[in-house]
Image 1 (cartoon, rainbow, N blue to C red):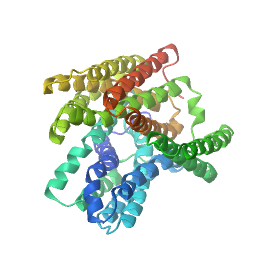
Image 2 (cartoon, rainbow, N blue to C red; image 1 turned 30 degrees about the horizontal axis):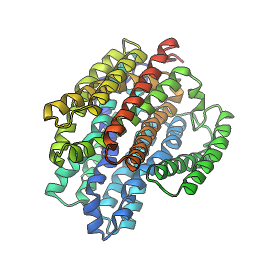
Image 3 (tube, rainbow, N blue to C red; image 1 turned 135 degrees about the vertical axis):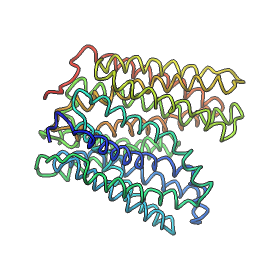
Amino acid sequence: MDSEQGLPLPQRYWAIAVVALGITLAVLDGAIANVALPTIARNLLASPADSIWIVNAYQLTITISLLPLASLGDRIGYRRVYMAGLAVFTVSSLACAMSGSLLTLTLARIVQGFGAAGIMSVNTAIVRMIYPQKHLGRGISINATVVAISSVIGPTVASGVLSVATWPWLFAINVPIGRVALAIGTKALPRMDGHRRPYDYISALMNALFFGLAIVAVDGLGHGEHRPYVIGEFIVTAVIGYFFVRRQLRQSAPLLPVDLLRIPVFALSIGASVCSFCAQMLAFVSLPFLLQNGFGMSQVETGFLMTPWPLVIVFVAPLAGVLADRYPAGLLGGIGLAVLTVGLALLATTGPHPDAFDIGWRMAVCGLGFGLFQSPNNRQIISSAPRHRSGGASGMLGTARLTGQTLGAAIVALIFGVEPQHGPLIALGVGAGFAATAALVSLLRLTGKRSVETV
């Protein structure tokens, strides 16, 4: 396969369909379990506090394994990592559905997290192989749209399934979809050999310890855990991080892609991504509290009023992908993030008695801004890396998203702990600040080289 020309039609359409199915399953499963937690806890005779591990085990496993699996993809081929991840995810979904205790369900979710990480770590790298360089923005926009929609509609999907079936079906439904994706992927996904180098298991372990402890420390800070413990966790995280980075600096193709972070446009794109997803999570976590506790909306009304955000992304992201093939990502991203800043500021300054239209059009503004930013930014991240380091770039893209979302959720918890009455409005204001910062970072890319697509 000529990696510069992408796949021929119609194989290209089948391949992108497999990527879309896989990322939908991986991202959606991170959101649907939240809604079902009370039901699962009652059914398994578990306490609400213990049941949180059904969610945390999945998210933590993905975060600590994204970069190691992306690095493995650079070495043995992205297709192998993706298909293995999809197979593990499908089998572990069946194990989740058959679980009869909290322990077995949590263990199955850990395995499922590794499968999801295999999918998410290299999915953007595979998109780079599917599409020719001149149409890469279109492929990235499809991927970004699927991720954005899957992140938001999880509660709606979970509510729909639970209204007609028991909680195991939340996981069992993944099995036939995963089998279809595996069958198509076997024939449609591009075959590319990796670069056979010894795998750095020590770096993989250090990566897991660093990101795992960092998330635990940030979460503990947000939830007001005993301060000496939190400080100790941050200190240990910093020590591990120091030696981890030192080890990566001595390698030509490091697991933590510090080599890519030396490319200014790549580093700025990652920074903009972290800040933007932090802003998005600040909004998504705080808005239900504002709508229900502040404005007296029901759960159904809340879900309906939050729909304009992802709905607008569905229409804007493909357009942004086409524009990304013609105009600088720094400009498109800067404009999009400025619009997102305005949208969040408008939500934060909504009057005390808004109607559905007042909230809906503000949500649409946020969706317009985020949709205009994400596809060009993701294209910039993947195309600014040398082609043989596409796996590392893809892994960093997913890591930036998860880091921003984790940081955003922790900040919301911290704000709510300090100011519970006005917490949602403050969180939206802070989110607007992060979006404005991301806009400035995005515009800084205009001063440098756009990409190294030909490297």
